[in-house]
Image (cartoon, rainbow, N blue to C red; front, side):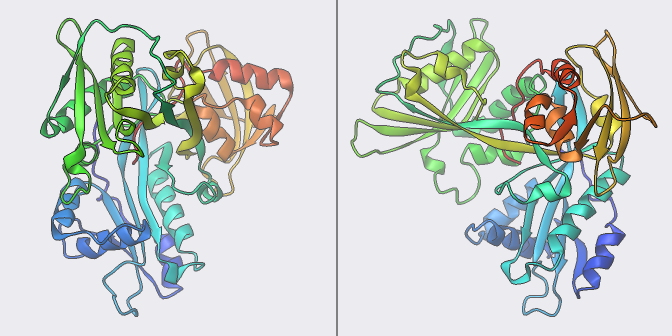
Length: 432
């Protein structure tokens, strides 16, 4: 499943009214209209990027044509057609357990100009997105974040973690598997198709993953207009003994303090299977004249640390990466497969009302869930934020209880942990 158009959904009237009361206009932006250029420039300003060139604007227009682009406009300003706040949303898909997925209202490009802070704009934008998604029948909304202190107030919470990995290759002698296939350099022009092919196979098996899109793959390949490091991009593909492409590594090289100690920066490392993973990591760690390898968006516990003689040569910095927001409790909880039976009554506190209530969760021997609203007394109580973090099994209820985010008897929390344990650790391996 790729990106589906959401541009036909109307603007949220409550947000429109709230913004109008402060003299601001809430409006959709047509990707094919004249308003797209100032919209993209406002997004670039919000993320401290350079002003986009004309070629970059046209490339982004093509990539975002199916998106729902929303701006907040101050028509009394000196640039009335340039939004003072932006958001970009679309219909995506979240893998909730291997082979099972759920439609996801994906949110990106959330910006508010520093000239218009503390006027309720972000609240209007985010609650407007959530109300629109809920009305359209989405059980979940999601986003990736640059700052971890912002989105919790609207019920988002981290559900999948990733590691930024740095490997000192001078200490990391390879001790991992010997892959029987072959590696070949491949051209940057072939990368969008290669990346899409491998990623689509692996993302349906990894909880927390979402599909990529052409613009994302072209960006990783350095093929976007005016890409600063586009000419530095190199890539190798791994094929198994049957000649099937099973992995792709995209990287650049930066000269270090010494010529024999370059830094290899991984832009993408997608592996369909253990053989491909080992082959690509070995290539990176044993690359000529490389003293350090850096890779972000790797698993929380990166497998490469088990493939080298000195595991302390691998430094992994954990970060929250994929934040989810539950809008429909039955729809979200019934979407995934579980690891053990469970029968529990959960009370969810949601100040925005979407998930608020008491819910009966029954997981049978077939590992599927039936979720219903109930008048029974909750055995466990949690915020909607905590529920989002629990959903994919990437965090344990007993851990959240220690932090005071869930209340319940230890035995009940332990049973939740057993049922929610994931078949694979949740991971989102791209930005969106």
